[in-house]
Length: 302
Image (tube, rainbow, N blue to C red; front, side):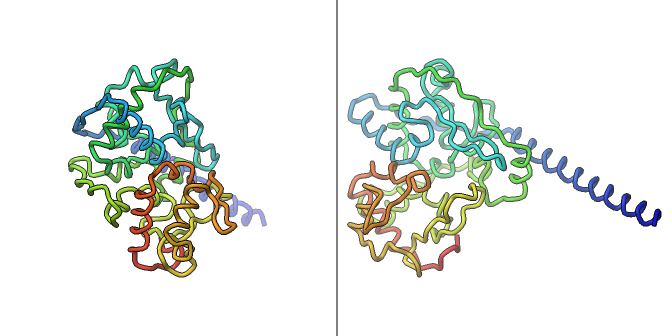
């Protein structure tokens, strides 16, 4: 009996040792990815100063989801606090106390927005640059103009931080874009944006952010890395179970304007219709046209 207990103890100790080595290894891999330096050549864009461009910059900032992350006054927010992942905290973008507006050049902001890279060339956590990489120079310039126009707000925000388990998850669940900079072709110019219009191409340009939750194929399903209480993203193709064909174009516009249609309400905490409501009717028509042009797919085929 004593020999059995001895070998059982050795087995458990060995297993714990293997687990500990694996955890340390994953932590080290995570740190290496966080500290990697990216050599990125930043292309400056014209930044307008007229009132019309500033107003348009604000609207783009809103419907692209930037306001939802950084706050109405650009003061920064705790966007996500999940012990399994860590804290996603957006910075104060103004020139107030704790803000980065004074210390960041236009080049720094473009590097962060389009490439997900800090001034020290390390990658930003959870900055959705895989979407903003595709912004046209005109849209990006207007967004920068709007950011620069905001009055200072005093709000000191700590940086985003991974939890202990977050370091493990980031190396195991590669479907979660902890560091979007890893997925961006930094040495290539973004493809030319399509001309604005009610077209599938322009709808695709406007709806890039939808793929974060609904998947690359936009067929929905469970969202990797999101808290358990988050519902699965619905199917945005015309495949089985999709509501979009039944809503029609006008119903689609209505639900993104008000969050409600045919008795169905959308929780803005899960689906940011409060951002998309800032799109024009023609922009929403383009998005609907794009979604209806996609091949029908079964739900959950991300």
